Length: 188
Image (cartoon, rainbow, N blue to C red; front, side, top):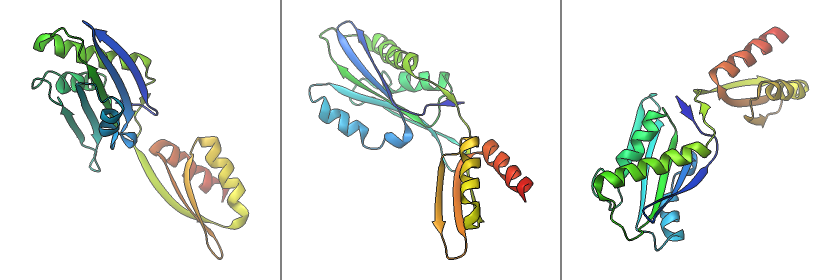
């Protein structure tokens, strides 16, 4: 499975219809369809497709044709995401009608092409399940822990400074957290 770390966009034209495609991580998806509709008031449709993992590690999928003929827009976009084994991301496609009807087959191919075009721009990264790890250290170990986290590329952390110790909450791939735990045990 693959995912993306930042948003990408691309524009595709098919028979004078213009498709502006946005590929975004799930963290940026909420409210984006409404924002795109506000930014493109003359656009006919804002179609979306998304895939993400829920808390039980199950793939959840959804798509919307947003007024296009049923199954001609959202499903072809979703199928491209499935084909690339993309997870934890969404694709939104703004369509401006160009005056030439595409037909249901042509429309399905156009939406699929729009998603493929944005994928050409995107940098796909292998999906790694992230876990959380909580531990405590003394104040004298803070700099050492920060150095270890930086060396392993663990950039998601929070610190709570208590009276006698520092509580750390770190989040990262299972592999990196395991390496970190081994280094901490080796130091003691």
